[in-house]
Image (tube, rainbow, N blue to C red; front, side, top):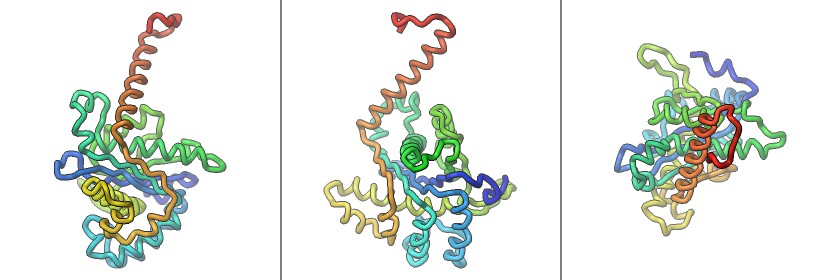
Length: 270
């Protein structure tokens, strides 16, 4: 695989990580979260990130966040310099469990592709509002390699006209005898995904608490992340119903047009 530092200059790169596990009944929610930055900016970001890691080979918030809060705070302080915007989408997994399996499978209603596709919608909105606006072909999506339902995410994004997502590892590693160059910005996305996951988990367990109380319960030193510009999203039951309805309409229309072919269009055939 080519070194990511040698390619894709001039692009806007979105680095996303996931937190949660849909197949684990003990996990209450699922999150996809990350940051937007220029490819050039991320290249400048990497050496400073590694310097702040010190002897640590890479950063993983779930394993290191509470033991090495000093390193976590140092890493978080530098994220706003490069990550110009943060994006996140979460879903209460109890909501997905309530959907019949037939509907869930037909519409690929699984947490990872659903949250990631929703995030892509908000990236589109952000890109259109920028001045000058950022065309879709100058945006690339990088997700961590190894997350669940990777193939479903690729199909969903391709069918909706988004670029094929790129999957990379968070750090340099050897997998099945092949060396992979790590995409360091995914380690920053890991921090945000874990932080949002903690917030959502506490909110599910304590629905009547204020945001400030929930942030105190999360107990991670990430104040700088809270102050970054954001387009957050939590998928609700009505959001899910709307998604199913719109997906069913698009699929029905696609099949109808395929069957219609080049024949004259007649409204009474609908």
